[in-house]
Image (tube, rainbow, N blue to C red; front, top):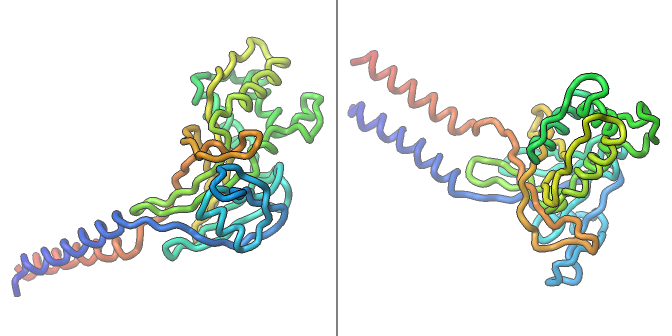
Length: 276
């Protein structure tokens, strides 16, 4: 038997499969909603680029995921978390809003630190510092004598999912939000400056920051996804909401087919080597 030819054919099969996977793009076109509240934002009238509030029927969810608009999961950190479950390329994808218990001290500090780093700011640490005070404003404003309902996490816990897509071997979820979210960051800055010294400086006139979405693939761990780079959507509600889309990468294990072919190639090579 021609050993070189056999190994070459297997190698070419792996390359062809990888190239095929890289050339394809697919979109999750439907999903099942669990737990209220849920609403969609859909284009109306068609061609207007204006979004209006809709329900979460199967057809409305499909329209939101495949056309202009989005599906909002939950409202202000409502419990239990609202979820959207669908299938993409044979993988079960579960997307979820967040609830208060998701906002641990560690996660809240990471989100805040990343958000302010995106506008070039480093926060002071320690008790009563900028990071500590912002964390209290986000998680438990009662520690500062403020109403519980003013907790900042509520504003970023109801993600608006506009697309779930696989491009090549990478999975993505798109979240609609403000293309310019400077008002959100500057609102946090104004609030924290009442309690800290030195003051935080303004985030400027332009900043981008997304809400947070929880994502689980098959029976894997929950991933908390957010980002700080948006592209214009070309549509919005009357108040300018959903004018920007944040594309977030989902961590998905390597496809088993590629892994098995890779193992097969190694086994063939070692077997031929022993015979030689």
